[in-house]
Amino acid sequence: MTDNNVIETALNELLTTQRKIAEQNAKSPFADLIGKFVLVRSRDSGCHTGYLHSANAFTVVLTEARRLIRWRDVPTLSEVALRGVPQEHSRISEPVAQFMVIGGCEITPCTPEATANLRRSRWSN
Image 1 (cartoon, one colour):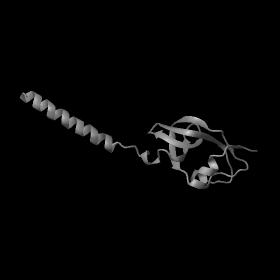
Image 2 (tube, helix red, strand yellow; image 1 turned 180 degrees about the horizontal axis):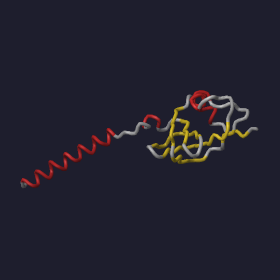
Image 3 (tube, rainbow, N blue to C red; image 1 turned 120 degrees about the horizontal axis):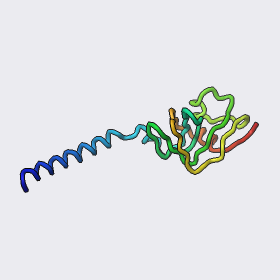
Image 4 (cartoon, helix red, strand yellow; image 1 turned 60 degrees about the vertical axis):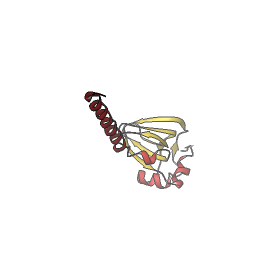
């Protein structure tokens, strides 16, 4: 092996190691939420619930996704993620298999109580 080949091999190994470290450090802050039922607030399309499939700084992909159209008597989305919404005066769409939210600005994991509540579609007055 020539000196150039040794240097090239060492350089390739170094670059491979650096790439692996960069990939580990770039682990998504949302990785722990993948597969969990979450509430997503978006800048442009309102609030959505579903199972988190993927997320980055620009898009959030949900499966079994529903849109929260209207609710009352719950002061913040934090309480929605904790307890859900009242049956009366609430509108939650039927689920779609997958939905991409562009401009998601908040992803909150839901409690089991909220998950059971928000997985029920409703369309009341």
